[in-house]
Length: 108
Length: 239
Image 1 (spheres, one colour):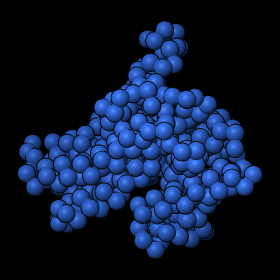
Image 2 (cartoon, one colour):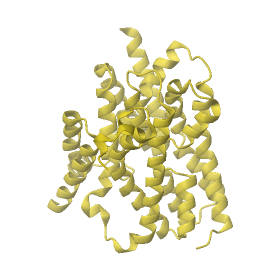
Image 3 (cartoon, rainbow over the protein chains, first blue to last red):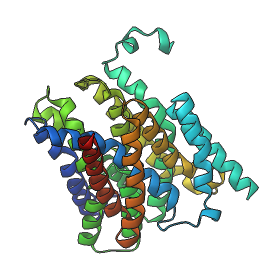
Image 4 (cartoon, one colour):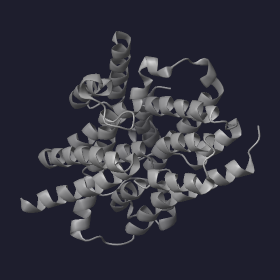
């Protein structure tokens, strides 16, 4: 049950470079009055970042663009999207997506 | 304990309410954290090292990449530099959260920001819709629940990973995209600008695919977020 020094320093370095972008904006920007355009820009960040993450997960599940005819993620996403829109349930969306993926894998 | 009858949970700004609002993400975190633990163990990390990694780095995609690079004996500097880029998107999420935490001191905001993830950001922004601020206690409840769940999942993956054959067979790899889909849809449903939001979302998807092909996935997310948000701001100005 040991922690090697080399690994410890890698973890510490990674933690530091992750910590700084996480805390700097919330600590500093919450102190200043942002101009109107900046507030409106920030208002779109949640949509943009979530859509980018969804796009990456569904269209390039293995790091590169997956051909449409073999893209199971995209098919499993359909029931997940429908459940999300109809029920507004996060857990429901995740569970239905997982079941859809499992069924697709069993069928394929 | 009956959850719906608990007085503390009816208080919407309490720590427990934050913990409760984190529950829908628990399943997703568990399966991704478990997978991360398996990958980290396979990369040759000890249980103690895996525990430290999940508590100090606390980042899903970052930990997968770190495990792969440590396993491949990559140079320390290259690993740290890569992780910096992979996790740089937090900068934008932290900025987007900042208007809702004006009532707190910088030190308290550092505590809140240090546990920021894609998922807790998504949940917090859904709750923030129509509000001017987010409760500190609620945010800690959300953050700490996600944090402990992530740590437990990593350790469980490290311990039991060897005995579970192919978690993909059960569709568990879809927990992450499923969670992102839910967070995106809930986010859009809680705002009253559906047309503009759809324009922003579609732009982000197109940009992320193009830029990720040309550079890397983490650069793709950052570039897509910056450009698509700018498009949203521009469209809003025309109207």
